[in-house]
Length: 118
Image (tube, rainbow, N blue to C red; front, side):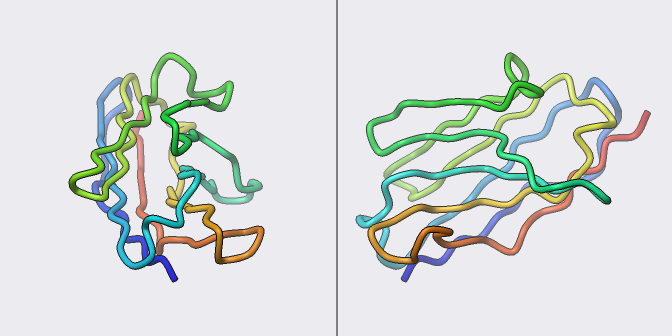
């Protein structure tokens, strides 16, 4: 089992920045991939950023060049640095861990709200 706790969301003006954190606990050595997803009201869940065990990163087209995913292994934490935020970035952001356990959907955090005002 893996437990994930997100933090760092909040209200920010367009053009501003936020850094989200996701702290993992439990069977962290079983984690192969960490993802950030988001779900905006009335929209489908969207994959925002990915970081693999080997450190490879990938981003959704809508956030490329503005968002950066990183990790601190010593703190069992994955970060999502968001800059140049836009109102359309408003969503609940979820941390997701794909591990050798947890099935195809993996483990999920509770989500953190990001609201970008225009």
